[in-house]
Every structure is written in C-alpha cells, then in structure tokens.
Image (tube, rainbow, N blue to C red; front, side, top):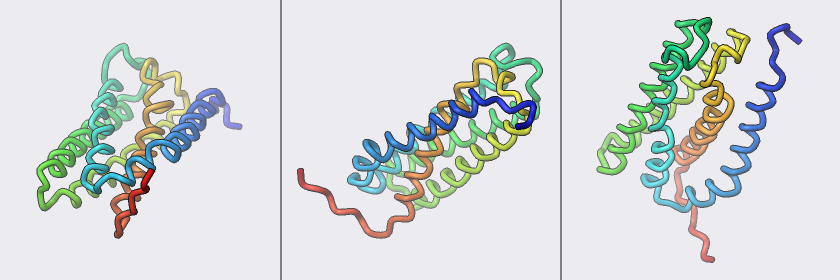
Length: 167
C-alpha cells in the first residue's frame, strides 16, 4: 500500500457508499420511481441544492492551512456551481419550463463529474486529515450525492413510466 493510504478513511467512504446504496434501493427508489418524473427529479435536485457546503473547503480554519488552495478552490466553486444548477433545475421543473429536462441533464452531468473530479483530486492529495472538519463531506455527503445522481440518471433515461403498485 502507498505510504499515504488511509484505511480508516477509505473504509468510511466505502461504508457510506454501501449504506447509501442500500437505503436508496430499499426506501428512496421505490418512492421516487412512483412519482411523476418532474416531481422525482425536483426532489433529487433539492438534495443537491445544499452543495454550497463545499465552499467550506475555502474557509480558513475549517480545513488545514496545508490543504492545497487549488484543490479547495476547485472543490468549493465546483460545488457552488452544482448547487446553483440544482436550484435552477428545481425552478425549471416546478414551473414546467420547456428547458427543464435539458437543465436537469446539465446539472446532473456537471454535478457527477464535479464529485468524481473532487475524489480524484483528493486521492492525489493523499492525506484526508488535511480536510479538517470538512472530512465528512467526502466521507459521508459525497456518497449520498453520487447515489442521488445515479437515481436521477435512471429517471432521465427512463422512457416509459413505471406502473404504480396498488398496496
């Protein structure tokens, strides 16, 4: 293993992905797939509207002063853009704008690539301890966000509505 490999951090991220996936499959997906498309996408986008939290990587004292300012800037501003796109998507879906679905595609693609890029840059840093209090963002929040993106992609790619179950 590389000398900067941090097993506890990796296990917490893997655990968050596993738990997020199980919760999504068991509880979220059955509810979301039964919703009208615009409502389901709006709900999933609402979760991403909180991505302004990534700006905390730019807050002095919240992360280690040794954390690369380039990393912090790319993560913070990328998340703020994703949060803004999520809010715009929610508005477009709520008001049934003709650009609603293309807007959600843009948001979902940007948001997914931004999160994957942040993980990639984070791996290059090698020391998750530099994240300071922000360690919970990649360890807990990002796995939840990525699972929500997957659900949104499934809804976006779905061409026929799923029949509602009668319970």
